[in-house]
Every structure is written in C-alpha cells, then in structure tokens.
Image (tube, rainbow over the protein chains, first blue to last red):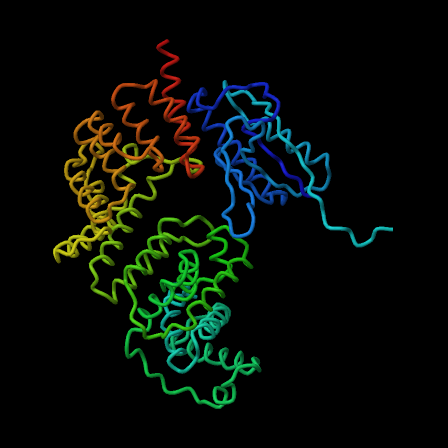
Length: 135
Length: 383
C-alpha cells in the first residue's frame, strides 16, 4: 500500500477544459458537483482506500519567526500568489496506476453544463517509512 | 443494556469515589473503567442496583490502580481502608463536577472534553471522533485538563456562567460521529437545570430545545443547508418547541433577563410562526435590542441588522449594517441577502460569491455559491 496526496488548486494549476467559475453554473449543477464529490469519498471509504479529505479557505497568511522575544512576522494574503491550494484528499492504494485512475475520476466531477470539469489535480506520493527488508 | 442510564450515573459515582478519598483524576479513570466493564457485564441485563454495582466496581478499579502505583504516598492507607459506607450526596456532587470540569483555569477545548468525559460519561475515543482529532490527542487533552484542576477543591463553589459557556460550545460546535453532541448537550443541560434554579440555565435549555426542534428541517439532501425561510415547518418538532417555550416563559417571569433567555426568546418567535411570512420581526428586533444591550456583541448587532431589514425593509437593514465592521463574520452574506431583497441582483450575486469565499465552513460555502449561481442564472435569462 502507498499513500498519495491529491491536491486541488484554486490557482496555480493549468486551466481546466471546462473552466467556468462555480457561481456561473446553475444551482442544480452546483448540487450535482457537490454530490459527486461526496459520493467519490464515500466510495473510497467503502473500498478501504480513503484516508482523509479537507477543504481549505482561500484566505491565508504567511508567518515566520522574527527572532528571540519578538512576535512572529505575518504577511499576506498575497493576491498575486501563483499557487493556492483549495483542498486535498489522501488515499492509500496498492499501485501508482490505481492512484492515477482515482485522480482521473475525481477530475471528471461534473461542472458547467453538467459536463466533466477535466480539472488538473496534483498527485503527490508520500515519502513512506523505510521498509524492514531492503537487501 | 441501557447506555443512557449508565452514562447518567457517571458524575454521581465519580462524586462518591471522591468523597471516599480518591482524588478526582483517579476517580474519573476508575469510573471510566467501570463503565467499560458495565457495557460487558450488563449485556445480559441491568443489575438491580446499577449505581451500587458501578460504585463497587469503580472502587475496586481505583484500589487496583492505587496498588499498582508504587509512587503513591498514601498507598497503604488506601489499600487498607474499607470503603466508608457511602455518605451519599450531602451536597450535590454532580453540580460540583460541572463546576470542576468548566473551571476557569481550563481552556474552552479542555473544559469541553473533560465535561463530556466526567459528566457525560463518554469515552475518549467517542469524544475524539466527535471533534475529528486523533484519540491520542484527545487523551492528552483530557489528562492535561485533569492535571490543571488537580489543585481545585471539589467543594469549591463555581460560577454557573462558565458551565453554560461550555455546554453552549458542545451544542453549537458539535461535529459528527457516533455521538450526537447536540442531544448530549441537551441531556447535560437538563441534568443541570434539575439542580439549579438559575434563570440562564433555563434560558440555555430553552434555546437548545428550540433550535433542536428545527434540526430535521435545517438540512436537505446531501447535507445541503436550508435557510429558515425555506424550511418545511411541518418537520419542526412541536413537542420540543412547546417544552422550550414553557421553560423560557417560566424563566422570563422571574424577571432576571440574560443573554441566553434573550436568544431563546428570538428562537421562540421564529418557532411561533406557522409560515415564514407570519414571523413577528418587530418583536424580534426588540429582543435583538435587548441582546445588544446585554452583550454588546457585534454578532448580535449583525443579526439585528438582518432583522431590521425584515421589519422595516431592506434599506433600513442596509443602513443598520453600514455602521458595522465589514470584517465581521457573515457581514458580506448579510449584505448580499439585503441587496437581493432591495431588488439589486447584480450586487447581491457579486456579494454572495464573495461571501462564499469567506465562508467559515463548507456547508455555508456551498449554500452561498448556490445563491450566487441562482441569481446569475436569472440574470443570464433576462440579458
């Protein structure tokens, strides 16, 4: 088994094929999309491949240490940031091929006109624990 | 096996163990173990004296733990001690436990966790699931909380207001999982209301019952949020509403108003309307005025502005909104709603989309996106 992170971007990914902002869909299309996402997660729970999924607020802040006894410095949010994560799903699957297959399904979630969004998702393997037998 | 009965016994039995000389942390652990054993042992039938059974088993667990704990100073005396014939509850032990678990030295998250375990009788695993954190994290939170209150005398009088804040949090910020936290908050508040005549305890209980009554109507298919005005009012639980109103009226009659009574009065006025159009917004605005006077809360002012929009028209609502800080949570959503009511769908759609980006949770984000989509679809049709 290997864990993969599926990342969805607000910004920073290549443009989707069916690239229409959600508030320009019909309410029914919005509902259909949300239902598809829920069903996908439920199905992965059923198959024993779901680990975690979370959505993130678009607003965030950069923070860094500013030296002993000083409060951390904050900056942002940056309107011009190139990359903005919208949310993630962690899956635990047998093969890389299976991870690709699932990412493809998730990217097919319906959007404007009820057609698949074809949005780009980022698939990132976890760095796993070292295996016991290495020779 | 009656899990409700078992859990209701939890605070009483902890109190008895503390009176027999156990410290709170050890008593709490022992009773938790007793609960686990009871789930096993009572599967064939509840013993005749469930409380006596649980006291005996928990006391034995406590002695076992004390025996195993070689560093314990009074180990010998404790092991030798015959359990004193139960002094019963001279003062109300359960009430004392509420105070201890909501002690002001605890953070809100710790007080919530400790209350659910020691007063509610939930397991660490159940609490962890309910708050979506790993079980080990929740176990640490609870044991740190127990250490924090270890110096507090069990009989120390507490402040009901701190307990109410904790119960309000359990009710209002409950997530999902096996345990119904809203129902649990109501159970714990009922139990508290049976032990004190404080008006605000009654006010909070009424507030919870009136909101809980609307629960079935509040979400649609797929967890979709249904706003008050669109709710199917035949799904409201009239029994809970009647109970909430009775409790509230008895509290209000004593003429010591507080914020929970004022909030419950607003909920009662909503519950009283058979149809959304029959809502008495003028009275609701008056109660928001009371609430603002009592709490000076910006959130109450925001809700008041929306109520003013219903009572005196959207322009008046927008005027009431204009004097508030736009950074307030849900300010943009309220503005979107009032602009739509004012016949400006273009501004409303833009604000709904912006409000969706600012939404604090996924259900609200989806709801606001749908509102923007609805208005934009209408605008496309007319263009």
